[in-house]
Each structure stands twice: as structure tokens, then as C-alpha cells.
Image 1 (spheres, rainbow, N blue to C red):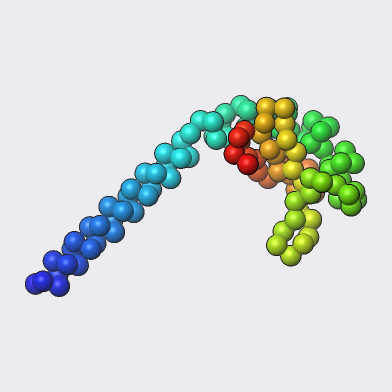
Image 2 (image 1 turned 90 degrees about the vertical axis):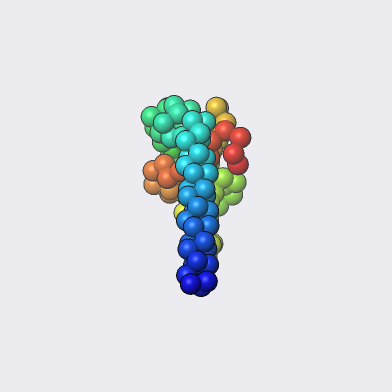
Length: 110
């Protein structure tokens, strides 16, 4: 009986701890400043779009052919996988080598 009650108490704390961590992660993801629904972060915003020449892979500063590019992004094995650009609103955009936006860091979260 003693082992059974310890099991119940332990299970309760594990479940409540898990629920608490889920609530924290939900709270973090609901921050509008970090949300992709915020127009400043949206790919629909021209400042974040590959249609903007500053973000376009045809811009030599973003080109994989530019070996001196300072905005290149590499994987763990040293292969260039894309580039990053910073928009005028402070959002850092990540693009693959073809110019597809693959992610962003909201203003102030770098």
C-alpha cells in the first residue's frame, strides 16, 4: 500500500510539472511580438519578402557565389545552407540559397 501511494504522489507531481511546463511554453508562443501573425514578422511584409532586393538571392551580397559574404548561414558540417538579412523593423530573416524564407528572429531576439 505504501508503494502504491508513493506511485500516485510521484505521478501527480510529474503530471502537474508537465502541465506547468506546457503552460509556460504556450504562454511564450502566444506573445504577439514574436508571432508570425504580427505583420512585422510576416513574410507578407515586403521588408521580409524575397521580392525585396535586399533579401533576394540575386543580390550579390546574398549569393552563394560570394565567398566573402558576411551574412551566410552554415550547417554543422560547414555547408552553406542560406543567408540572413536584417529588415528595417529589426526582424532578422533567414533564407535558403534559393531565396525561400525559412525562418526569422523577431526584433530584439537575436
